[in-house]
Image 1 (cartoon, rainbow, N blue to C red):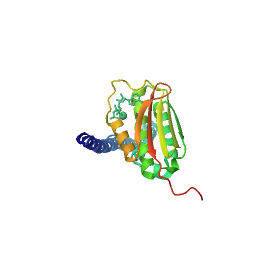
Image 2: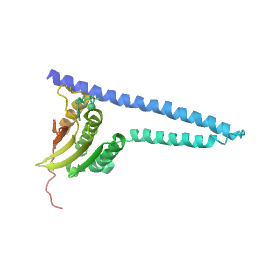
Image 3: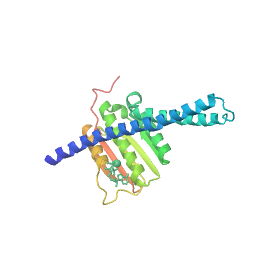
Image 4: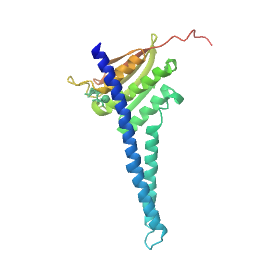
Length: 219
Ligand SMILES: Nc1ncnc2c1ncn2[C@@H]1O[C@H](COP(=O)(O)OP(=O)(O)OP(=O)(O)O)[C@@H](O)[C@H]1O
Ligand SMILES: [Mg+2]
């Protein structure tokens, strides 16, 4: 009991800390990246406006710096935006996360979800976060080439799995915050997390959460 409480406390602390870390990272990015870019731009435009002979070559550089600024703003606002989950639903939101993951990592990422409409909003949110952490782990630890995210309703429960074809869980691998938080999230959604091996020898993370029967199927 004491240990379980301790673990929950560590989990909550960890969440707080990761939110704090993320805010710090974004603040740094706004300050260092955007601040610097805008300062540089101001100087370049100032010089170019003075029309000093030979300063025409500044314009392509100004254009490049502006492009960088736009990309930075996109990155920061994407990180700040709450997940598209509420608008899109789990299937589309994970589909998008999968495409972004593939783009970022170069891994082949396939997302195949059905039946997700039967999940509660909170369950969908927990499963989204579980899949996110599982994908992060694949990128960090698995040395995989492919990863597959699949979700389906079976026998009154929803099963969401993330399976990679990487090196598998090292025997001496130690659970850190990631696995702990996935377990906690599965529990918060009323279910549990299974960590096992995939068909190709990689890791398979599967969250199983109960579906609440929604009074009668008709209409
Ligand atoms: N897909 C995977 N393939 C291989 N090993 C994995 C995979 N996922 C997790 N592991 C192993 O399990 C360990 C625990 O994962 P966990 O997510 O808890 O911690 P972490 O990713 O190391 O750190 P963090 O707390 O930042 O998530 C990892 O350090 C890694 O050794
Ligand atoms: Mg992790």
